[in-house]
Image (cartoon, rainbow, N blue to C red; front, side, top):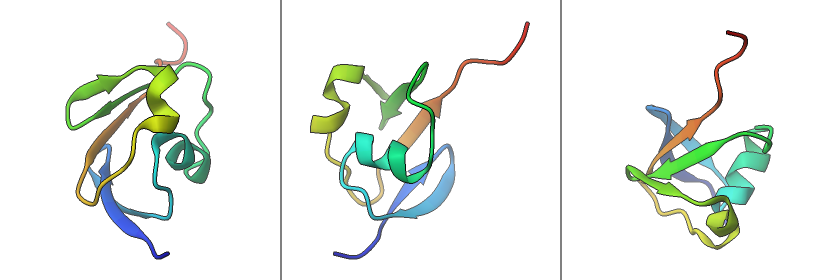
Length: 68
């Protein structure tokens, strides 16, 4: 139940998700070219669904720069 507070790209964020895949869906990120780090460790795409979120986790969602 209930929302849990994590830190996404430096912002305190309340999420209902309990894993990285759910987090991306909830925040409406495109899955195509993302990298995700949890507590400064990059998580391979194949492990997102198995990577549980814990309150207070520092999550960085890295998106490719547009253009260039």
